[in-house]
Length: 572
Image 1 (tube, rainbow, N blue to C red):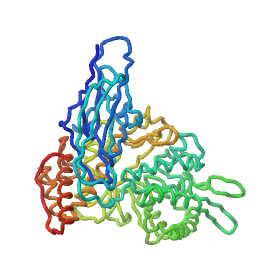
Image 2: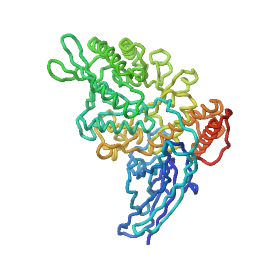
Image 3: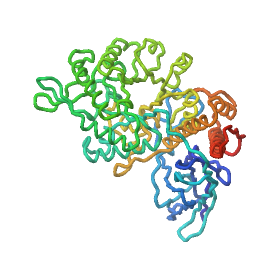
Image 4: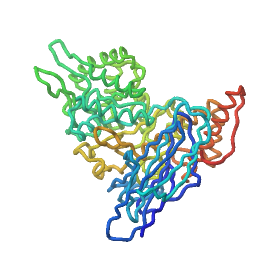
């Protein structure tokens, strides 16, 4: 004898094999706008006490009204040997190594086999047509066995609200590592296969609220051991002739076209000086004396005459090319990632060089030392989320923020071991503190620390026990060059939509009223380090925001001007 158990979960649940999940409200409710999407989870397990395998598949069926497309994924388990660092707080689901739900594997047949004594989950994504009329719609979930017997049936209510969300204002970059895709799939760099793979990964990024892409003019000098190197990914051709340097931008042009086609708005040029000090040049390959060879790298003095001559010829031509392509106004440049006071002289020299070659272009760099910022060398600092206070107190305009492996205490992050609420709260924080941009270094970093070895991200999720699992990548390399999304990426996408929803409501009402609504729902003033930890807060807030947008959109359409404030209620 055997018995199945099922329940519905929301998008903030993480369903572990050995933890019975909480069954969410019946009927399950969610809400969104036409043209957007929402998600819920179906958790399942089986009581089966026999040494022989139970060879029985179960079939999930999700029935939706016209105008809704369903995509079903298996919330598959991946291992973590290093879920958190030695410095952490109490807001973790666990600090023990183990198996974590994360990668979303497409399940077109919606057929699975339950594991005795272990919970598993399906991630159900509901995509709403752009022209779907507002209203409350029923989605029916049923589970059956092969002979057609219905094992379980539940209903979910999807509220499609009036109104729509504005285009994302926030600039959001998650560093795309082009070399890691060539390495994992074992294809030549910038071969047709590589370009096809890149396009698939960039498309998923754009669909997920990532609107800026790291662009490897030359092989990015980040996360590389001193003296070591990563697989060459260089979009610009260079040739040293008797008359000086010549440059070819055809691959860069194809990259720009690909990004535009995929929906990317902003380009982020990889640094032209090494990380943590700007002491050396990145690896640059060029045609010299009749053969392709490395002409700059770790042994190059970044302040030396030879490299400066190269940059003074290259940078103005690059700027002119970007201007010709119509993307210069949507391009940002790095100098060197994460400089410190000990790097002051080399960084100042690099900044002067870059400004000489590029003039009034936009620059940004990760920088969390306020005293360093006060020196005036970094135009747009990208500040670690746990070091923002002095920058906010000084009212620095157009701030950016980031987090990485170090931000494991108090602030938002997306480690496997953290609750999804800690991931999604970021959108509210970015809105409240008027951030211009958000940066994270790992969209698809499939190497160990310092890029000493390549990894299989389905087996090694912590860069070789170097970074807490969840820091180094958001997407997984699926078969045939197709990326697999993750629970963390989907929740981060929800955070970006939360931000857009707050901005939509502000357009109907006012900044003060939106901030007051957040404060009232939270019961506190939210900061980057202090925010509600309970599961339902974000869903409750988003529900209030959705309903107020909907009511004000309907009143605006009817010719009214005043806005409506709705009371707290169901989280949709």
